[in-house]
Image 1 (cartoon, chains in turn orange, yellow):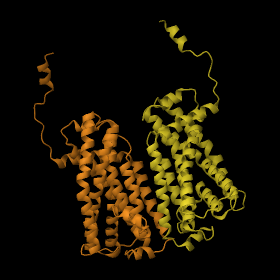
Image 2: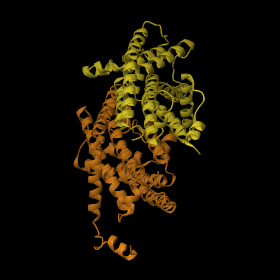
Image 3: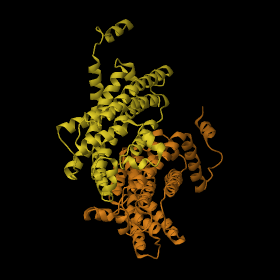
Image 4: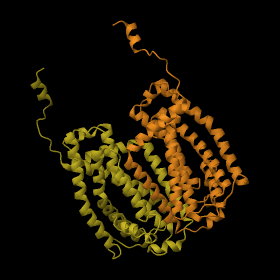
Length: 291
Length: 293
């Protein structure tokens, strides 16, 4: 067959239409929701796992005293509310960091990554689409954990300003942890293996960021290390809002917010740079779709 | 070359008579070598173990000791109470999940089919894999205990009698749950979807077994309290705590009832687990889905 004839047959007559970003992202969300819905049993297990976790710390709170919590400045709700906020928001950021890595790993594992990236879909939009659904799910999980906590007797100091400040702190919390996720995704692209960055980050932050205990209980050197982690400032700020009714007008909250902004400003370019190196290296090696 | 000549080259003159012990050793050694090759994983898990013990020690600073006394082990500090719980719960979780994880891995890598078609029988395979699981989990349990005893100076009663009794309780605990591990492995072979059964058991064990709090506090939830005492782990943990916190031994009147319950569970669950696993293997062989995941 004549080559030109062949090209004519497979060539597109209509030029590809530029699809708006929100439509592409929506397609990713719909796709992930459909896949997610097929694993109903896992969904049930995830939910029961979270409920069990919250109830475990409720029962643990029954043998604790509220003294250290109040000394740290968290006035309402005692240990249970303190731990509930720690667990719920830590799980939330864990999702934020893990979702980027896991979605890339899954696409590589299933061999669908190269297919998607050989279409006109831009890699940044691909990442955004992959992450969006995870955020919807993790936000629902966060809300559910807080509701289970409320049902078990957690107490919050709620004012419109404290809620607004909590939302701001949560956004900064996500932004700072997305940087960690992007950085580790860049490493995964290159080394194609488990992820020491995410692992180290999640363990160290659990130990030194005050998820289960106030920072004052740590020795000075661990407390000092804790101050390098964004989770420390986010949890402190969120707890001061929800357990003491503080808001943006409080100097402590402002200090937490400024620390988080500094972290985001420094970490974002570094994370994007590492990601670019990993992505370019994988493209150069032709190993984008390999795991 | 004639086909007959080719067959003659490949034909074995003698039938293989390797004993079951050789098969168990081969499975164990092959998998143990794989484990040793994951150096990063081992290092990461070791650091996680140390970090988790450190975390529990800081959590313990918020606990009221008088409330821990309600557990019935006397005036013990919470960290000792929790350390025994965390060490045994992690050990159990790793032992049960190890078999199903390995099987998932074999199916995914396409190595299960050669194993099934070889002369190795599945019983030797399970035993070999399980021994590997016990050793690997034992390493991490030892890590928790060493960090607790040597670095955090947790006051556990350690002597020849209590150590021997503790090891016996751990073995009984593993046997009482071995059936569940085998059931999970059998179900994974057929349904190819993760290991929800082991995950559910791990979460329930940690919650209902009273790893972090005395079970006395569960009494206000009668259904959960009854469920807690239906789990063999609750008895194993009770026995382990009596041994390491109070210094009693296996044949002491306070530990013997727990031992009897664990033996009963092992006798009931191991045959059921073996049947489910055999059913799973036979089904995937019949359906021709041994290598699909």
